[in-house]
Amino acid sequence: MMILGLVRWMQPVHGYDVRRELLSWSADKWANVQPGSIYHALRKLTEEGLLRAVATEQVGARPARTTYEVTTKGEDEFETLLRNLWWNISEPADPFAAAFSFLPAMPRDEAAAALRNRANLLRAGVDSMRASLDSDWVRNRKPAHVGWMLELWSARAEAEMSWCERIAERIDSGVSYLPAELDEAQGWSGWRDGAESPGTDAK
Image (cartoon, rainbow, N blue to C red; front, side):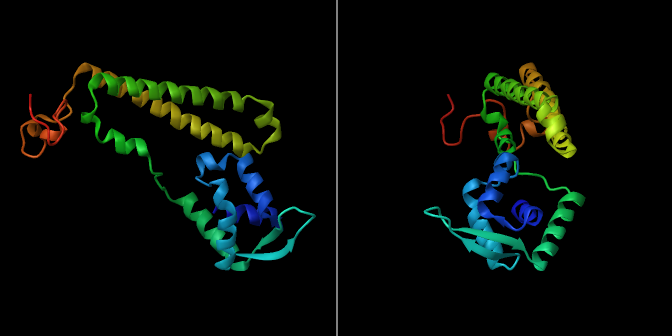
């Protein structure tokens, strides 16, 4: 959607300018749009009839540049994708959630320390976003919604910081990872705090 939307916004536009604009938005960090995939995506969108190449030009020894525009089909696709993301919730994949699901595999002191470290990293990110929000760059040189997006990311990070610190305290307190009725139940031995790894001999 990002590439389709930017071509629609800037058309007629070279792929180079689409790439430069996306990088200026740091879209590789928050929208999973990798710089190396942009030209491939432009070609694929063209093959699918969502974009059309309106000109290809070459100046001197520079690589040839193709200019793109959005087709009527591309307009419809962009509108569909845009409204789907506005009106529905799509949870992004979070690698940390996969790691946290194996919490009992971590020593308690390390798990608590890692959570507090995560909180500190998030705090540094929040401080950076707050500095950006207060900067002339955001206040006077960017559309208002750029600042609003930074406010959203900051609020999410602050909520996760609080959660990390709260869970670290619970881990330090020694609270059991399993409810009492599961503590001795068959099939849950691997999820007990400090359980032996599968295939190891009990000491």
